[in-house]
Each structure stands twice: as C-alpha cells, then as structure tokens.
Length: 549
Image 1 (cartoon, rainbow, N blue to C red):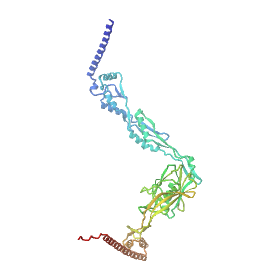
Image 2 (image 1 turned 180 degrees about the horizontal axis):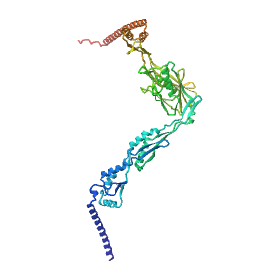
Image 3 (image 1 turned 45 degrees about the vertical axis):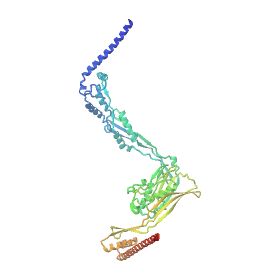
Image 4 (image 1 turned 120 degrees about the vertical axis):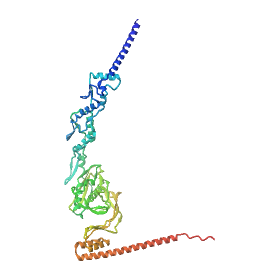
C-alpha cells in the first residue's frame, strides 16, 4: 500500500541518518585516539602563522620568542611628528617603546585544534589541511615615552602670542599690531600618536601632525587708539639719594614703563622688576630689614613701587595686593606707600578693572624725580575729583638710643642710624562731584614700627687707653659720646682724644649715677606702693565681733 511504502521509506531515511552520525562519531573518535605528533609533544599544529611567521611545530615559548623577534624588526621604522610650517621631531619605533600588543594570540595558536568540543576540534584540524590559519599581530607602545618625546621637544616650536601694544612717543602713541601664537598640545599630541600607532600603523615609516593650539593676541588697533587720556599721575623726589640708590630707582622705573594692560590683566611689580642682581641693572644701596637700615641689591626700589601705587590710586584701578614698609618713609605721607621685598614676599599688584586698555609710562629726571602716569580712555564725569588723605592715628617717639660694639672693626669706626618714629595711620579716598564731597572710604591701614637712634662702633685696638675711652663712651649710652670718641681717634689729634675721653668718662659716671638714682627711686616707689596696699587691706578688714556674755 502506498501508505506503508511511505512509512517505510521515512523509517529508512531515519535509520540512514543515525548510521551516518554513528560512523562519523566512530571515525572522529578513532582519529583522536591517534593524536597528531605535535599535540602529543605540546607543539603548535602545522599550518599556523602569525602574519608571515610560520610557527608550525614550535612550542608555545618558542613561538613567543619568534613573534617577539618579528615585532622587533619594525623597531627601526621612523616616526616623524610635524609642526606645520615650523619643524619636526623624529624617533624610531623602538625609541617609543614598540612592543607586541596582543599576546593572547599565542595561547590561541597553541590551543588551536585542541580547545573545544570534539566536532569543533576535528573541523579546525581538517580545515588546516586546506588553508593556513593566520593570526594578525597588533602593536603597542609606551605612552610615557611618547609623552616624553613630545614634552622634551615641543617647547622649541611654541610661540607665544604677542599682544598688540602701545609705545609712547613725542607725538603721542604708536600702535604695534599683535602676532598670533601657537602652542603644541602635549596631551592631545601624545594621545593622537598613541592611538594611531596602536590602531592604524602597519609597521613602516610614517608622518603625523602634532596637535597645535592657536593663541590669538589681545588687542585691537581701534581700542588702543583710544588710549590718550591721563587717568592718574604721581611724582616723588629722591634728591637726597646717593648714586647707587638713584640708579636703582631709575632702573626699576625703566622696567615698569611701557607696559600695556588689557581689561582684566593683573601685574605684579615684584615679578616685573626682579631679579635683584647686577646683571639686571641693580646696585647695593640702603634698604629696610627687620627694623635696621642695611645695604642690599636694589635698595630704594620701594620708592618706585610707591610712586606707581599712588598713580594707580589716582587712576582708580583695582589694587589687589599692597604692603606698607616696616618703618616710615619720608617721600610720601603715612599709609600712602607700597613696599616690595623679595625675601618676605611683599608685592604690589593691581588689575585693569576698566573696559579699555591702559598704558603705564614712567620716567626719572636729572633733578632726581620719578613720575608714573597711567594713560587710558577717560570715562569718568568731568566734575568728578578724587583725593587721598592720610590720617595719623598714633605716633610713638623712641626714648632710648642703642649702641652696638663690633670687635672686628677698629676704634675710630662709627656708623650711626637715625631714629624712626612709630606710626599707625590709614588712608582715605575722598570723591567730590562738582566740588561737593559725595563719598569717603578707607583705602588701607598701616602700622610702622619705631626704631631708636643707633650706632655701630668698632672697639678693636691694642691700646688700653683707647679701649677704655671707647668703652666709657659706650657705657654712657650716648650715641653722641660714641661719635665724639670715635671721631677723635680717627683724627688722631692727642688733644681731641684726651678731651673726648674725659667727656666720655664723665658722661658714663653721670649715667651710672642717674641709673642708680632711678633704681633707688623705683625701689622706694615700689615699697611705698606695697605699704599703701597693705594699709588699705588692713582698713578693709571687718572688726571682730565682741565676745559673747
């Protein structure tokens, strides 16, 4: 019957399929029972390559060495990094830390035809008889070495933007156009080179452009051309200064002159005029240090910063940092000074808080005057007037003199420093409009230490008489006596020496007697005070109650 034939026919097909699978399984089992020699010896199957390197029959470690050697052959390839229109940096791939990147392929190659189920392994080995298995090497590099190459060489190609600037001439101001700058992006270039070498590089010489950032200069000619008005100006005199201090004032003025500040720019006076060195035009001159007047390179430079400070106040620019001197100065009123000191970090800083550029002009004259003028665009009302007023809150006069002896200096040497009065003061800003005061605000406050008149005197001598005379002068506590004895021995006139020595001896005796009398008076006053206190305490004691009857 048809139905029976169809049924049997179907059964026959099923039986044949089962038989085929059974035979195939038996065949595979038989094949794997006789394992290839490479597998038994732990060697890689025949027909396996890494790129062009035949690693057939190699052990895993041997194949690894062969691949390492293959990767190393690319080490001489030249990697060139370009800065457009500027230059280039070249290094070999080995210099940049070339190494084998995908080491996991070695384990895959060693396990090819052995890792997985029986059917998969059988298929891999059968395919290998007809077609080689090829793994592709990927490269890796040392990012730190790439970064080092870039950072060590990029600086020569950096070009700072040059802002448009002004120059004051006899006829007004001259505008100089700015120049666009460029800066090599160290991080961006490092990442770009690393990504290319590890992702796209094929092993040959190659050229890459470095990442470069463009810096646009500040300033437009139309803005700079508006800088014509005097916003603030101030002058001080250094007529009593010697040659070295005068030279320092002129040098500091020169270094601060000719600067254009754009809106938001801040300037540090200390950074602009340092270092204080002979190479930078400075000389040894007097300056303040811990309440003493000492010689230092750049002595007198604070008069430069102080003069500029007052010009800045007049221009109403924003002062961001200012310090007063340790002791009072004579060329401005109390609290109108601005000290700078490299050793203590004192600085004078200010910012252009206006909407337009400003220009700093400074100069000194043969009459020993220094002037700073701030130029800009005047936007303040014509009836506005700004004044600054110094207010002294406290004045302390030194009531002693100090004498220092120096055994390294000969008798006859004497250096005297004047006394400095101590002050506490503050500075007021007063604004008037059309002659009427409309505001008054405190700008700063300052405290200046007092310093007594002092003398440093030499006492080195082999003459007992001279030593006794100078020590008697020292004992007198009088700078004038020390000056007189030192001057007499320096002059060498016997009569003057004898007179000065006698005067010093008498002054020392009088001081000793005065000190003794003062001590006795102080002791008596102390005893009297103690007696009075005891009597007052006795009077305040309550009377004892009468005895009880």
